[in-house]
Image 1: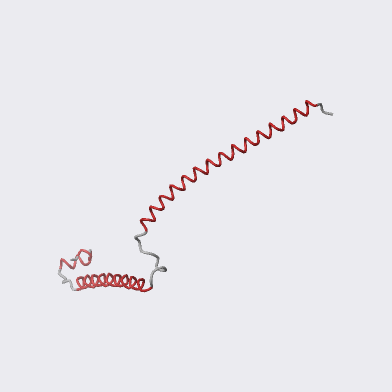
Image 2: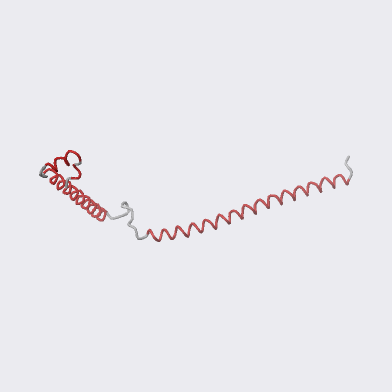
Length: 122
């Protein structure tokens, strides 16, 4: 049988172990809470940056799915007209360049240039 002071030592050890575990878990939870606060501060900073970016984007046009169909058709037609006019201008420039090359008069000096460096012929 264990003497009374043995039980006292056992229970004292158990209570000290319990207090040590409680202190350890309290410290761990406090550290996690402080990390959570730091993450919350970083998140609020990012949120303020995103709100600023969202304010910038308000002036941009919206998604075509959300727009009225007439507005989308009109914008698409205007874009196609611009592309068509650019293509026509490029085609006219190519035709003019081809006419200039094909109608060049050949002289002895030009003949040598045509054989060696045709791109230098005016």
